[in-house]
Length: 568
Ligand SMILES: [Zn+2]
Image (cartoon, rainbow, N blue to C red; front, side, top):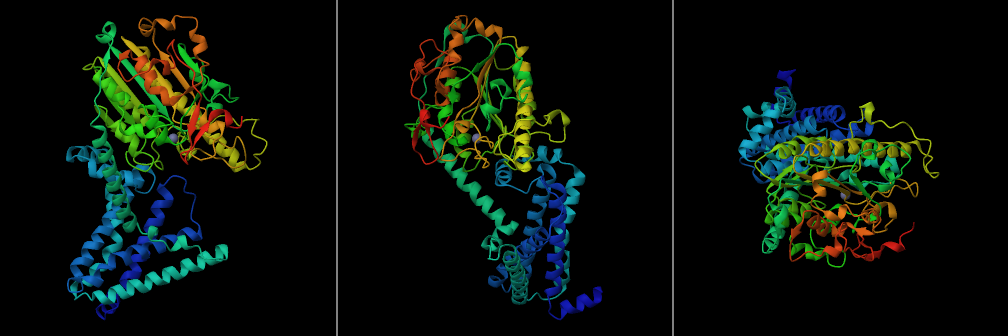
């Protein structure tokens, strides 16, 4: 067999080599993606075809340079095959680790990791995973070794890889036709090649990185004045801000939902639950830009010129930490990361929304920060992945502890079992967030000094509440479910000595104040008792002098929408 193949190759036919390689790449890829990624449920004929096409795309892309480098075909072919093998290796390691294909965020981590951090990270990986990933990643290029004891004819290889590629395209066309009676052009896209996608991800990362640096340069010119009031400046203090993700207020037991999604929070003492809080925007990025700076619905661009709450806290002597289970770079993330990077310590534990990264991954970093006695005054910001779609990835869904019993009440328009399942996954993710929040609050209850925690969601979420189309969030058409957000405040008894008005019986009425989280910035400054010329206590939710203002939202078309015009 080998002799036969060898002589065929010697006779100039690289069809065999390319064909065997495409076959091996396809089979291995299929096996890994189907067995080790989240949400994989066996093979379909379309999956098998897709895997073969992906492999044909990859090899064709590897062979393209042979057109240019004819005389050094062997060197360049080897180089590109190694790149293909490495691309496979990174993808497989990522799949083993995060149960999803490699992401732009993973490349960002690779580019920004120091050699020391890289070694630490590799130590965390299982050796057998790396060895298995390495063998299966490079195995499909082994047949090419047959070429290397003869002069490689680059032109022939490129023609043959082109033919195999065209045959693959032909089958894509057939598949597109037979499925929908018209050609689906997305099937032809180069997106099916991981080599092409890796290059695109690196380019995307570099673009977002440039954007981040540019915004940082602009914001570095901001002058900050802030100091904590004398009476508490020397006390031990820990302030925690937890930013939730896509948490719908109307799905929380804490706000009267019929399912027990928040059993622990329901019984927690010292919890002040604010009833009428909205987000200024239903997209993560825009909402956070306003929550943590002086930017607001009428002037979102103030974000580029305004100090953040982190800058203010640092100036007032706080050690600041940002721990995130969201992404560092991306169309919805880069602006948030600019603010994160204002902090003294920044930890991103996740690389993408599609990963299996549960919010508990932030806890070891959080506990380390809480136990660190070198800093007396701390501000810790935790950015959760919360209940971001896909809901079933946001909680340990094989743990019966997080399976809420089937409800008797689902909206009337929901007939399809698939939607009922999505609502269940969503509610289960909230049940999980309840536990995460408790694990964040618990160490604070044993705190010696002043401890305070604010939780709010970046925006709400529409989960088939209104129609059989789950709107999610971020649509220019706003509904109450995407705009209303949960907002609560927990503090220990030591805090009561700081804020006298908390003794005031009027405080109960504060819980019904109409408030937009665009004024969170002012509320936190007030909560931390910081003096600062740029603040306005009439915007602070907890201040006696709070002034009610008309509530408005900036929709994703940049139009300002009054809250009262939303359908209730
Ligand atoms: Zn969000």
